[in-house]
Length: 139
Image: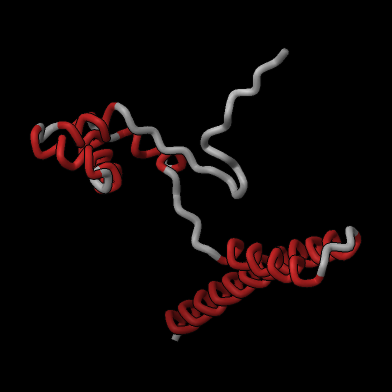
């Protein structure tokens, strides 16, 4: 009986905590969308554009966020062999989408592995951030 009561109260408190977390997350999203709506209205953004902007922001807010390699601190604990293998698994399929690299990889079996482990660095870009920008000449 005591075990059942302990289990039941633990289950109820866990569910209550999950519901509270969900409610806080929903409130935060609602406040952000409300702020966006106010901004768009105050700056007289046309209704069609406003709706498209809100739709895109909503989709991006609900999208699953990918965990970047730099966010997983324990990967630094891996041996060099495992880190190289992981890099090859992460980057190799993307590198081999390039026809030239795929042909070169057929000639040299280690090319993609070498590129993936020594030459590729991934960065996460924010929406609107450009990976390449033209140089501005200062006169």
